[in-house]
Length: 89
Image 1 (cartoon, one colour):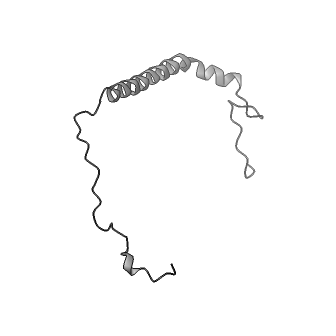
Image 2: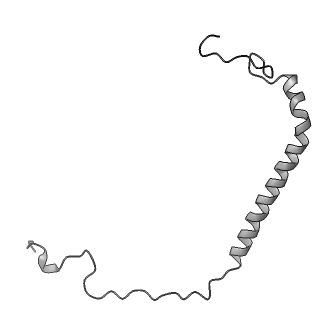
């Protein structure tokens, strides 16, 4: 077998297209896989919808909102006005 070349699979032709054998092999699982996918999609959609509706009903009226902080004196990281070198006015 030459390097870099994959062995030929019986389910795909030389152009890597599925053959009739692949369609026949997948046939028994088509309905079950579709139903399973729809069931999972419905469950996830239901959980998502329930969560959004449950969160949307909360109005947060029982949570106290603190007042704005009072700024007195110097704030952190500021320099006093006399620490700035003299500038021409």
